[in-house]
Length: 219
Image 1 (spheres, rainbow, N blue to C red):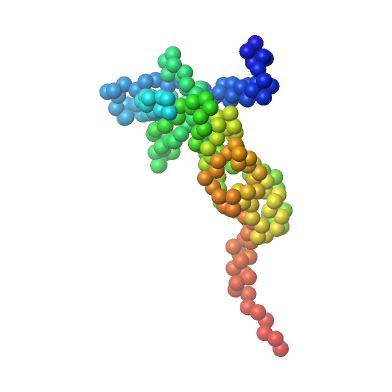
Image 2: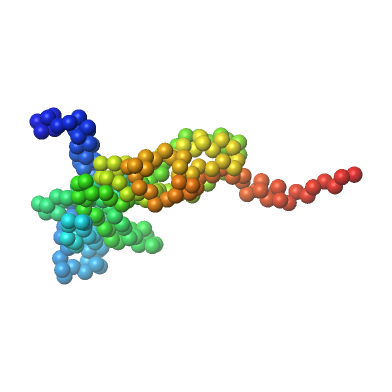
């Protein structure tokens, strides 16, 4: 703490943010034995995993299935997680997951070890907020994106980006990525600024009625 107090104010803020983010979520893992079969691991209610990174050699692991499910529901792919492997601790992101197609149970997890100061690739969830006047007037709100793929520093990671549905005032209105107010100096996006996030459209019944209703002939 003495070191932090004697630093530049801007550096203090970034360092404290980094510490807070790093301490937010945690999970313990065990090193996977070379002779352990996948069936044995999954029958033991554990999930096979691997951790790797720019400065981290790949390590095969297993994590408790229930612990990981709780973690994934809270942390998703855009929060730093403190991963403990024996006495070794490292800051990681959930890079990718595989699931059983029928039950939805996790069958494999990739953790990416984060290096401080190194930009990371991840997906940040879109949080749809506020009411739409178009919806109140009978329009249907269609969501075309659930998250955005970004590249950013670990200290800039957030749980979500908000999507303001009040921008959809009438039928035909569109929310694009450019309307989200994302700071592109912090976040490098794979999506284009004109990509559609959400729209307000007429219900299908109304559209069908418009098409099928014949014009009244003039007398």
